[in-house]
Length: 366
Image (cartoon, rainbow, N blue to C red; front, side, top):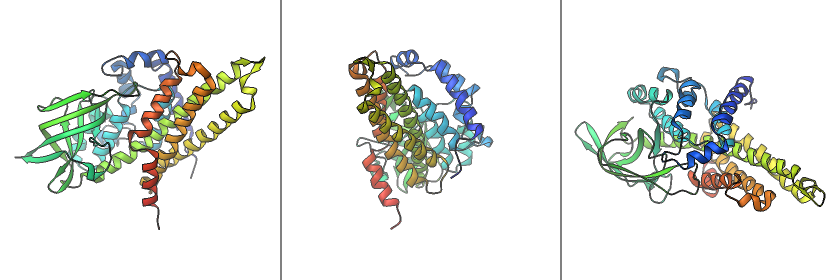
């Protein structure tokens, strides 16, 4: 493949990194962790409206910039470096699922708000068992005149308490439907969930005869869910790569400055080996993430490959960072534990590495 690191994308990276260094410092992250919404609306407004990041991969006809997912991967990698707090992953995933329905009327109605940052969205699929599989759906959709009504429960919904628009997968007599639900709809109850990763919010949604709008064709919703899911895997892989690269930098910086027996601990062979092993994993993770982001026709395969590898690489890098930092790495005041929690949570968000390796095995030609 050609290099994904073009001059334009590196300029985008520089702009996003500069913005995030100012708006998503460790102090800002810790402050947002304590808020109800989990993010800063003022930062979100700049990110969406001035930088145009929420519309980066949305077609121009729907108010976006019309770029590909490789540009979004750059943004997600930079967000992963700073543990960005905000509903960006949720909104991008929902937008891609809406786009995948092929419903031009719904796209024209819903996507301009997402692209302009006026509408925050999320994709709600998983239920009690947390599986992203069609046979796990129990939420039901029934016709009510010209509209639909949803009944059921969704779990582990990213930023489910902060969004304006919920894109929900539910069973219909024809199969699976994808539905748009206003966050203020009657019969909808949103409950925040306690999470290991305090930098990313999740919610439970209880739906009791909630009015909904069908997106696309009845019974064809799972294909759109799959596309949104695959894009989410790629986005998360890029984010994990950024986080892994950042903890490696932290570990190397500490190893150079921490003195023991009159010499930096980075001069000891055991520490050198740890850093070298993590470096190999970080570079391999970056290759996997950007290969998946390149729009490969075998997206389901490469997305799961990236998800499996980048999840393991990030968790290993975060754990080794704590080890190299010694006791400091476990203290609340040091950021190492925040990265470890993000790595642990992200590893399970859309299926663990073992599930993705099984998915790869199924997708490989016999």
